[in-house]
Length: 99
Image (cartoon, rainbow, N blue to C red; front, side):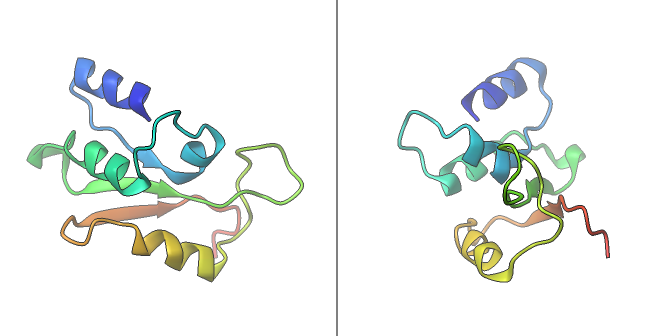
């Protein structure tokens, strides 16, 4: 995520946090998921609208980073509990099952 934040800083484009990419390439530091979400939120300007993040789960038996067809409730709820409580965020669910 640090590389995305650096690019965002250099270009002025907002950074989008993606939980699955984060899990596939865990940072070498001990920065928490919540801290990375907050850091990406600071790259969003009022003209960009509300901060957006991407959420998906790993497809079992597929290569790392492959999206699962749906969202399992408990892991999603656990993820939601890590979100900053005072930061409004739109979550895009990246799933194969669009229904």
